[in-house]
Length: 406
Image 1 (cartoon, rainbow, N blue to C red):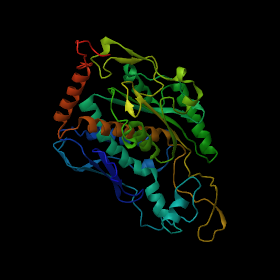
Image 2 (image 1 turned 45 degrees about the vertical axis):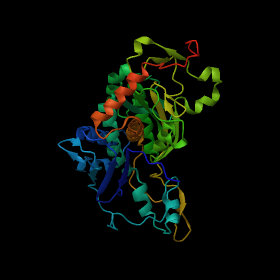
Image 3 (image 1 turned 180 degrees about the vertical axis):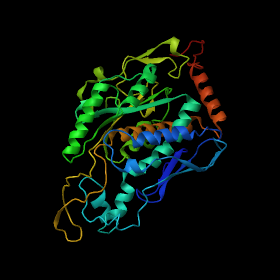
Image 4 (image 1 turned 90 degrees about the vertical axis):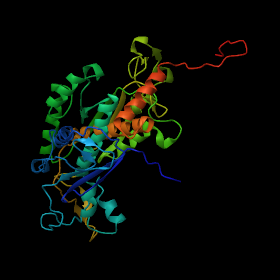
């Protein structure tokens, strides 16, 4: 069986303490504006958030475009980007020693057994969340495509850290105010009171030499119905989004719309009623409206014209200052887990990663339906689809007398 490979895709490379991180993005149509300021802004946001560790003081992540771009525009060939590591010491055994005491909750033990070594270093260098800097840079290309070609907006934020939860609702018409509120928050949440509660939790967690996780949320506005497919499981957009989110380090669950809460409602209480508003026919929704969005904008693996809503849960980071019960892989004797410089809380950073990887999966699905060799052709394909969709019904079948067969 041939493995499914979307047209728009990316690969990252690089270790946490190696010379740098590399991202290669394939399938970008020619003519897309590659705004490095947008990419660098997202990289800076990924480094921010209350509770981050000392590594963020050493690195100032910026992207260098190596291939695929001329005069600020994509040219249709693979786009390669480099993020240099200032803290590059992978071969320095004094500063980056072997790790023989695996951390519970990390990839250390599994990776050591997989690659038949007692040194967890090689595993943790690649399993480290440092890799997400390259993933954010790559995913920003999809985000730029969504905005420039399809006029789609993406917004992510922190919904909760431990039990400090914001109840602020999110809507497209309030996007500017929501972005401002999030960017003013030290924890990337949406109100001042929750920010203060979350910061207090993180401070106490640091005193306790512990770590803390939370929930992040992403909304995608402006998708028409029909992006994705119900014909094959691997083409379902919710499945692809779920895979991308679960691929983020330390994520343990993902939900679309109400997610796990769906099991607590009857069908009559859950499914979003369908209506039509002719005044909205000129929008991407094509006029189809819902009084609720419990489905999170996705039904049958396809967008339904409502905002896509994705939630993700990040567990507490596995590296604790207090250590956890473990063993020495060489002696098999009980030891405390080995400490690697880390964060107390990286939920804010995780919200940036999730926001961008979700954007990329949506962009890939858009290109599969409307793709062309250039953004001009792609936009033309998109507009043509919307024009035809707005004329539905097309030619309805008639019987011999000319009566429409309903």
